[in-house]
Structures are given as structure tokens and as C-alpha cells.
Amino acid sequence: MDFSGQFDMLLSGVESEKSKREVFNDFLTLSLYTYTQPFYRSIKIERETREIYKQYKKSDIEQFQTMLTLALVAIDARIENFWEDVCIYSGVKGDDSKSGIYISIESNSDREERFFTMREAESRTGSSIVRFADCMNEEGFDYLRCLKVIAGEKDEIYFKITYLQLAFRSIAGEVSLLDEKGEVKERLFTPMYFINGVYLKDKEFEAVKAVRTGDILASKIKGIGRYDISDD
Image (cartoon, rainbow, N blue to C red):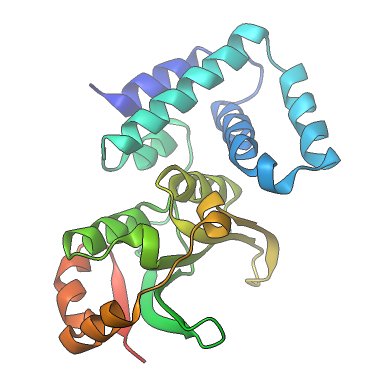
């Protein structure tokens, strides 16, 4: 099944005077609020949601719901480049250059917890983060238990997609929308950030140190982007 093509067909079927990119952005906003509202419930979110609803017919809102379901299925099926293709269809142009990926083992001495931290300054759609999480699983590290992500993006649409990608895959993440100077305009945390105890147990941590994390993961992530792995 052509998931991205099917998504584009549904998106194109929404009746609106707005551009396709604007409609896509509204869809992302409603989808993002679906995931954030339990943790960020506010009058502002509810007001913005109502304003978006007013701009579309009931059938279009139902179309958005179908699109969200399709996106969930595509991500669950590990369809690579789904969001990238959807962005192209929607007129969202990204930079072809690859951003730097930085992974380190960090610790919280107060709670005696140790975990991987992945930092990506320009996440685009967040696909490289998801691929790295899959690499961790392939190497025997459960990212649900020992990975935290700190990601940022200057484009509003990419910011929302990255958040949704991490939320869909249950990755503990902190995602920020940045201005041109790199200052944080908005910051959101995925549900797993709040509900998951992310850490490597003592024996696991010692095993990681013994085999050198960089050695076992470096070959896996070469196709994802530039990287720097440190065990410090």
C-alpha cells in the first residue's frame, strides 16, 4: 500500500480555500493537541482547537481523523520516508543537508539512573531519531527504557511532525520550536517523557561501558547522518 500517496489523496480531498500546506499544518496542530492535551490542558489549546474546527466542515474533520489513523498505521508498519514524502506532496521543502546527531550516556546521580541521551539540533521530521531507536533495539537496548531525546527545529511543521513521530513510537522526548537565533519559542514533552522511568540498571550500564557503546552503534547509524557518540 502506498501510505504517503493515500495520505495525500485524503489531504487533497479536504475542501478549503487554504493552501495544501496550511491545511496540512491545521491537521498537524489538531493531531498534536490530541497527544498533548492530557499533559498541557489549557484554555489556549481548547480555543485554538475550536477555531480550527470552525474553518472546516464536519466531513473534513472526519477526514483529518482518517489521516491520523493512516499515519499511525504507517509508522507502526515502519514505512520509511512516510513523513518526508507527505511533506513533499504538501509543499513543505526541507534542507537536504543532514543534521548532526549526538548520543551520550548520561547519569542522574541523585536517582542513580544512567541513560542514553540523543541530541539533534535540527530534527526535520524526526525520522533519523526513530531509526536510531530501532538500531538500539537491534543491538539489544530497549529504547523504551533507556533513551531520552532532545530535539529542536526552526520550522513549525517539522517541529509538530517530530513531536508526533516520537509520541507515536513512545519515545521519551523533549521537542523544541526554535527561532532563527536558536532560542526556544515553544517546548513540548512526549507522554513517555512523563510516564516512563528511563534508565539503565547498574549491570546493564556496566555492560554498555564494557563493550563501548560507540563501537556497537556507530556502524548502524552511518546512514542516518553525522554523529558523535561519547561514553563520558
